[in-house]
Length: 266
Image (cartoon, rainbow, N blue to C red; front, side, top):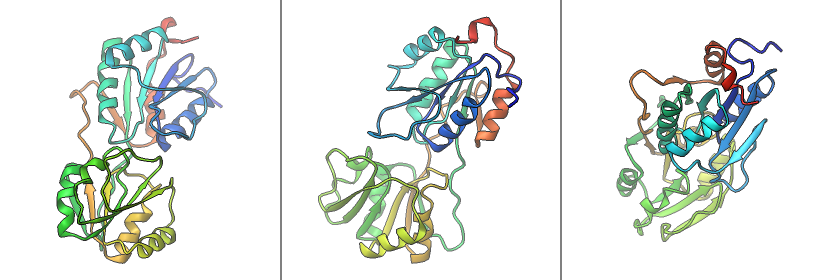
């Protein structure tokens, strides 16, 4: 396979944890002369590992991340973390600026409301919790385990909580916990919502196709959906570029200038 301009001898750090990050790592691992290192935050107990080298855990802030980039002679960074991982993105922006390393933010497009949908957009999980009493008493909560305390005080509501790993308290008093990992099917989501008599769905605008079946099921069942908007990207006006697909990210990497001797990482 052709290595492509901008790849020869370059070490690429992929800030990962998403399907896009794994797809990008697989593409880069197949490029002759390219070394790919994927960094995972370590918040999931049994993550799907990408191809290539993998490191697990945080960097300890933007200053330490910048030092790590210099020490490993990283030639480019692609932040392909979850759309709601704003703190990691902010650290990457600062670290890459300090270390003089090109940075691309890879974010899959968000979901778009369609005919038959009854979506209620909110800015935060706290705002989502505030909207629920007026929408339904039986809630399917699919917004991740870290934000569950926002719903802990809603004692009058019942929650079906789905997370990958067991959450820590506080949790809503009346709940059923389901540990599961996508992708999910429409039939499966319909059966789940009907079995638990769900009246309203809560989700973050994660985008992608892995969990869209719940949105289609809510549409078919004519259920309201509370959707938490993505946080704004913490990017300077001109220094950082954004891509929506793995293909766009590969093009960006191809278009980078050939690395100098200090960027090879070998």
